Image 1 (cartoon, rainbow, N blue to C red):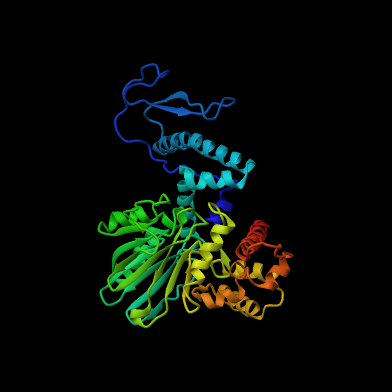
Image 2 (cartoon, one colour; image 1 turned 60 degrees about the vertical axis):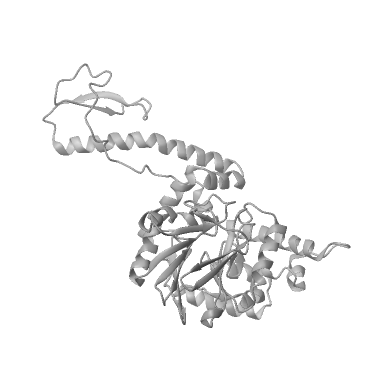
Amino acid sequence: MAAALGGLRGTRLLGQSCHRPAGPQAGPKPGSGGLPEGVEYIPTRKKGKNPMKPVGVAWAIGLPSGIILFLLVKREVDKNRLEQLKIRRKMMEANQGDYETEYSLYARTRLGYLFYQRQVKKARERYPHGHSAPQPCCFPGVKILPIPVLSNNYSYLVIDTGSGRAAVVDPSDPLAVQAAIEEEGVMLEAIFCTHKHWDHSGGNAALRQRHSSCKVYGSALDAIPELTNPLADREKVSVGCLTFEALTTPGHTVGHMVYVLDGRPFGGPPCLFSGDLLFLAGCGRLFEGSPETMLTSLDVAVGLGEDTLLWPGHEYALECLTFASLLELDNPALEQKLQWATQQRQEKRSTCPSTLGEEQTYNPFLRTHRPELQAALGLRQGGGEHPDAFRARVLKEVRRRKDLYKAT
């Protein structure tokens, strides 16, 4: 989502249709002078006038068909430009305001959906095979297939290989997800949506239309498209022999949820599908929550155990590790992971999953209790300050620095 907002500034959203409306005309247009049959009235632009104000000009039969087609298309393009100008004006207003206004435009207006559609279109053109090479993870009875979508998002197809039933987590691009479903030959039963942002929920409607029995799960506190089954904290859902547990993890959004696949029946580790709560060496921006709220949510994730596999919502590893290395200059685990991630990304390979045990050795958002990080930030616990209150203050400072780092 943060990447989306970064691109939202100064963005020009193009009109979606250049086709002339079908059907008979209601009659001669104003100013056409009652044109005879076979004469077309076409709005055009006049020099020195408002380019958005149509002016009537009559064109008779006999004009070359190529020119007529050009003029018809041009008329629709001109008509769409007015809508484009309105969108651009709102974008400019957001740029002149604060980040909160920009986020509100993305998350709470149609502009966000229009921008998401543009993101999808550009990503399909730029990354026809995805931004990263997917690396499936299998253990007996389960297959987890990362699906690289948009410019850095991940959706996940989780398959019960015994029954051929499957769930998808955060289907950003419905075409990419549907292609994976067809290639694997599985039946989609569930969509698990971590939160409302379009880069995580934009494919819900299209997949529901294609798979009518598929249910959409998520928090009722987020405006998740096509939500059919709101979930409460710790509620469990079965898909074939797979069991997922929903955990409420507010902070990024008020209704953010993560999903934990129980790997014990298959002899595997727990699998955390973290959305925008937690990334490799990073965490999501605090759009709708406080540092205290996010700290509590991160502690929930850490409590799942060190062997838990982390499947994040974005490919942010290289950026986050590079930032972390600026905070902790002498951290061997961090240096080693950064070298590995650099090699992976040079080969366009995915960096997920990591484990929660690994993350606690180099992810600054999970190291708020570490004296070396606190010292690097120049922070000290105040007299009588609760340890968790101090950790929240450390988290706030790390997040502030990361936001500034990302903006440069």
